Each structure stands twice: as C-alpha cells, then as structure tokens.
Image (cartoon, rainbow, N blue to C red; front, top):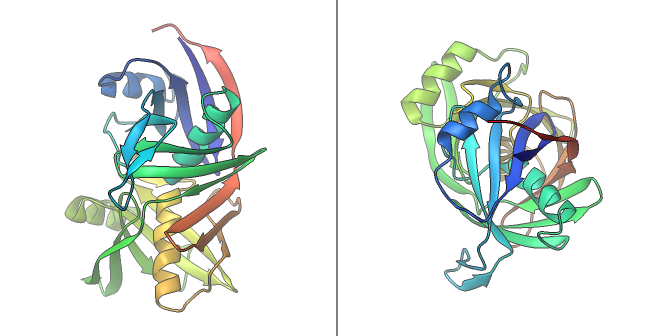
Amino acid sequence: MTVAKYSANGNDFVVFHTFVKKERSELARRLCHRQNGVGADGLIVLVPNNDAVDFQGNQSKIDFEWQFYNSDGSEAEMCGNGSRACAHYAFSNDLAPAKMSFLTLAGVIRADVDGAMVQSELTPPMIVNKEIVESGKDWWLINTGVPHLVHFTQNIQEFDIQEARALRYKYNANVNIAYVEGKNLRVRTYERGVEDETLACGTGMAACFYRGFSEGRVKNNIEVYPTSGETLYLGMNERTITFRGEVKRVFTTDIAL
C-alpha cells in the first residue's frame, strides 16, 4: 500500500485514502510502530462521505470523512495537528479544494490550505470543570474535540510526567501545562494514546489558549510554542478556535504488510 508521512509542528502522522471504511486499530499499531513500521503519533485514513450534520444541527455538505487512530490503536474523536496534515494531504491529492470541510468523530472541521500553511477550525470549546485541584495545582478540564486538563505554571521546565500520567488515567484526558511568555504561550502536553509527552498537540494548545483567553491571561490571536519549538497561531472567531501553522509532507512510500 502507498502511504504518506506528515509532520505538523512536531506531531507526525501516517496518511492514506481509500474507498473502504472499516476498523483499522491493528493497522494503526503496525504502521505507527517506530522500529517496525513507518513510525508516527497517529494514523489518518480519508474515506468518502458527502453529507454530515454541522455544529448547529444543520445538514452540511462535506468533502470527505476521516478515521483517526492513535499509535496504540485507539480511535480518537479529534486531533488538531492531524486535521491540518489531513487537509494538506487531501488538497495535494485532489481530494478536496483548498477550502474544505470534513467529518470527524467530534463533528465537521473546516480547513484552509495556503501552500505549507494550513488553518483549521476546531470544534467549539467546552469547559467541563474548572474547579479541579490536584497536588495543590488548579486544573481546568476543557473539551476542544478531545478532553484536556490545563494548568498554568510559573516554570514550563517542570513537567512531572508521572503526575501527568496519573491525571490522564484519573480523568481520561490529555494533560497540559502552559506558561505566559510576554503576549504568547508556551505549552507542554502529555497525550493519551501515545502515553507520553509529545512534541506538540493542537487540541492541547487550543485548550491552553482558551483557558488563558477566558481568564484574561492572553488576548485574541496569539502565538503558541509547543515543545517542538515551532510557532502556531491561535485565535477565536465567531464560531470557535482557529489554529494555523506549517505542515510538512516528509515522504511518500510503498509499504508491504
């Protein structure tokens, strides 16, 4: 089979398209394996779909549907960086126009491809709980397509992975710490499904931005820097959070399974 390897701000993905929608957990584990496969944080599969329901419950014309799997084979509702890699792949392979919409388990996502820069609109954010206290730290639980715990810290270098892993299982959520640097944010994320810190997480950065914006820590339209050191641009429009950054197609290859 032919697959593409993509990188979006440190998150990497294996991507391909097919006419057949089916369960692909085992395929995801094999393709994403760092030693015996292509190696990636997740698998993205594009399949045909022309109709869906948007956030307002209205019938919406879409370009395709995706299936998204973490590297451990678990299916995820949404992935911010994955949505941008997916959009770039779809446009590059003539599967969708530069301005497109596609269906995820979290809902319909809009995306706009402009060369290597891709912007996507995430699902409308929802604050689930902002009264969580663990180990003397205040956490907000926010859903930006998938659930994220967010804590603002004074030292971005201090990210306790064991604490993050315990919180991930207690709340079944990804875990993020954020630091206000001037007008912008630095973010670190522990991702479920990968079960470790990743170089970037789009929905995690969006959750951190949304808490910071809601509390007045940051203004609209800022830069966010994940562990990869690359720059993402986040803001709020009338519908939801917008998320823009560079996407790289690393290679395309044939792989025998």
